[in-house]
View 1 (cartoon, one colour):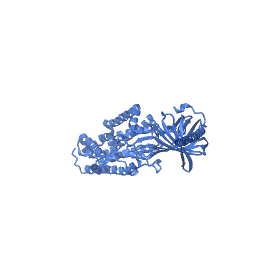
View 2 (cartoon, chains in turn brown, green; view 1 turned 90 degrees about the vertical axis):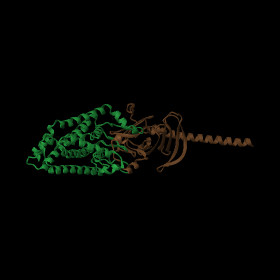
View 3 (cartoon, chains in turn cyan, blue; view 1 turned 45 degrees about the vertical axis):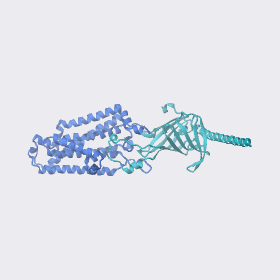
View 4 (cartoon, chains in turn brown, orange; view 1 turned 90 degrees about the horizontal axis):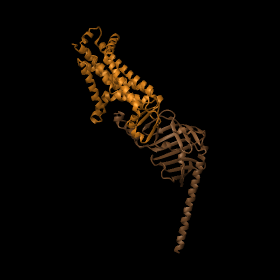
Length: 233
Length: 291
């Protein structure tokens, strides 16, 4: 009798393990499909308008130019003027969201981004040394598009990216990227700034503890033109 | 009065000490520009150390607009001394040389004589500021080029778009002119109380130093008198370099965060000028001139 119970338990355990492994394989397959779609784009240049929305930064909307070359070269530069971007977050892009090295994909159920149903997939890197330690992708399975990602990095905290698609959806390239991050409060001694008057308390309070956001609206992409590596130096 | 103003201007610009001020400004600005040209990156890194921990800033921060802001910030504390050198000497200098009585033999009202002297010191003050603008703004633009203006305030960071900066400097220099004319008016007023130049010059600087300390110390007792001190309002030129944002935190180009603050400060400074000059005129009309 005891042997039968143990045997049943073993069968159940093996079945569950196999089911989990098969599910992981499904998720891997889904991620690979998305990756394959993105890999159609070898390089691109995009023009866009960037808005920095950090409570303690007052910055005008500026024009930006974005360069990407497969597999992981990415550069964002302001088209004139001064730009402020969260440290480390600049290099987070669609290419780096799906890790280039090995990863394990885990199914985390279904959710919605806006009104689009999405599959939540957690990506864990095989290697320990990489900058990204966990990526959560919200994948639109019908169109094979990443609608949202939450990336936890080793050095620079957690970043959230929401992507909206339009004309370039066939290439997996977004029209709008909304990048959120935790912004630490900022303070500079008045002796350095030579400011001795008090800022309005209401304004000071408004500036505290708000999440920082960078919004980029892309206006035009130039895809697969054979970008030189020199651009990324 | 025009003729008398010409004479007063001739007297002001005949003195070597007048040109000493222009030379001092040139040297001071030159030293700042040279320092920032050679080691500007170190300075920018020092100021931005805290901010750079979380953000990467891309662009030409050390441009002509930024250099001019640094110059104005440092210089507008010291320029009052150079203004006092001339303004506080306008009456006391004449008294010292014994020419005041001769001056009053002219067929001019005492008010006209005083006003001509004050206007001469105002013209000197304005020329000094124009020289600061040429050296601090235009020369810096030439040496360092132009870009957006990146400013670090004690609680937040402001990036003013390049196309939105120049008019702000025009406004800031106009406001600085008002602040410096207040200093000239104070020096001019104090020059009535001495028969040598040193006393009023030192007195003017002492008043400015004491009032500046009172303005900067955050002590409740001093906070009561702060709004009435002209030194509190002299630094309001900085308000030109802060703009409004809408609910989506988007910069409103061409706006000023606190225009009412600028108007209030300008009013306080104007009231001080009227008080100092009015009192000087009143004193001069009543005074028994013996020197």
